[in-house]
Image (cartoon, rainbow, N blue to C red; front, side, top):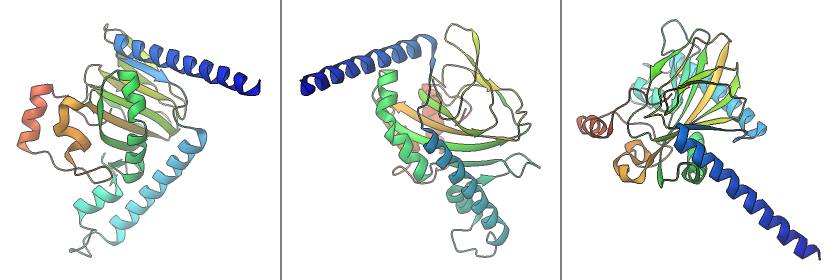
Length: 252
């Protein structure tokens, strides 16, 4: 009797899961985006938040004490930025910090590839993960992403809530507010998106980028594998991006 009840529960759960993915897929394809709540657990976002703060602290230390002092080591500016993250992209904002293709976040990227495949209805390659600490006053102009980034997710990890604007496939402007762990799944190459100036102290976002398998050249963002630092764009890269529709940004 207990075994039969367990089988019934299992079938019911599978049916619920199938119905949920059908809703997500239909909404994503119709509007160009869909919100999925609690993609990452409270424990996972807390771990990511503390991890990124530690990486930012390490990057500050590398830049202060090592860069320029050990010219033949990994502390050359180009390597320190690729492996430890990029500090202060905006002048006078030393707390801004970004990290691309990190081994930890690329693991998350690959873990959720099948989830994004189900939502988008496409076979996908993992491209790259991207972490960024934004600080008070930062904003994102209205833009679309690089042409090969057909399926992306932005996940609010922590810090101040920061409203995101997106234009759906019907041309309607929508405002999205995510809680920690929530994910906006969107067609970044088709849907314009933006953020007004951040009013809080700081905000950490994780971006997960995927491309259809027809774009094999952009698998892993042209790296040899996941967890490796990004490479500089070549003329061939730029030509291929133009062919498939070039957006202006890697991240949102």
